[in-house]
Image (cartoon, rainbow, N blue to C red; front, side, top):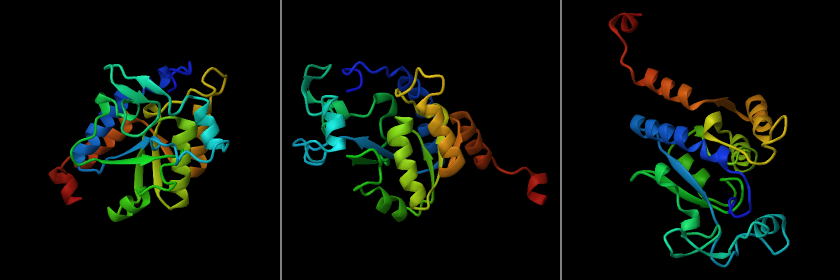
Length: 208
């Protein structure tokens, strides 16, 4: 959808590799992995009334438009269960991962995300995804309102809006999240922290 609209997605593409490493490390440590997929029903009934902000913004980007997928099959822009809403092969869900569709920027709005997290007894969230100042920040805001503690991994997100400005929306959102809504870190720091947690204590540490 972004590419068809002429929007630069290079900063989003750069987030794929570190995110892949984070997801692999999380799985290896036994952490639950939850995917949020932005998409609408085939009739766009969950996109909002025609003319509403959510509908209008996505309509301007061609939501629902019928197109050919790269494999030659029929597809539609941002519509559920089409090539357009498949998860990248580099980030493919594992057998035990949870996949949830959302139809607004926040992953908590009218989805089962809160119920799933509470059912798993989860209070702390490691957040990745795009875009930083829209879906990511909206989800972290709602998570904070629901008393979840969030850490956003800075190199596992990206933001086209304002990317060429002296101070980007990406940087502004990182500041807002770090100051008020949660915390920020990096993929490397997260993976290192997991390694420290999983490393058995040596004899001296155990005695201490």
